[in-house]
Figure 1 (tube, one colour):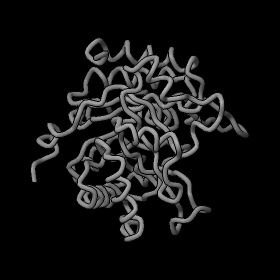
Figure 2: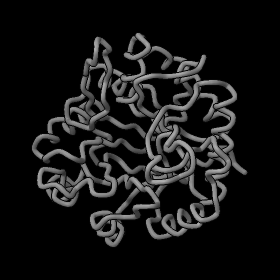
Figure 3: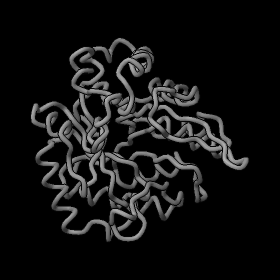
Length: 291
């Protein structure tokens, strides 16, 4: 099998896109991706469809798929480091959806999506244990999902308010990507939260990360909160992007060798509130991303 860097030529350049998940557009003040595409087509070139198999696809996702518009499949229900999670029913359902959606690739937060069996009351999202053994187990899961679906699987660094393990998050994912021979979805907002939580500067670890594997990037808003003296950051997908997130995104954009897609995660906000954030992303990316 060709190496990932050889397989890169098969991945399309999607440009700037938006994300969604089941019910995200149900409220009147949520972003209408079709209205955005009609007004600013360069800002909604593709849709990252968040999928939890138990919920399926909502009307907006169905409409996008029906129009045969570019998309990616963002899983919301798989613990990649747990072999028991790849049960036949889930794998079969994923295969059917991949065939329907025809995504450019699969991606998703590579953490703990549920605790115990995959069941509605157990769904959550926690970071992985940042250890060498954990990186190997996650890499095995990525390879298994890639071989089953025939699509590239890009792990995404997840958010969190606490992290366990002896590795820096970027070191962990560098090992995951190398052992799975895959690319990376770098969530700049999640990385900014991690760096703040661990009291690191925003760019700590980026210089040593294999930037040739960064294929997709996410930008999103976050807010600072305090509870009983404990300071934490919420990944709330508002248009209010942290300065550290923007700094990470700028540096990653300058250094990444093979970027294919950027998502501004702002799906539960009005279009007018999101447009300035899109403008800043376009400014950082440069003119080559405008077409």
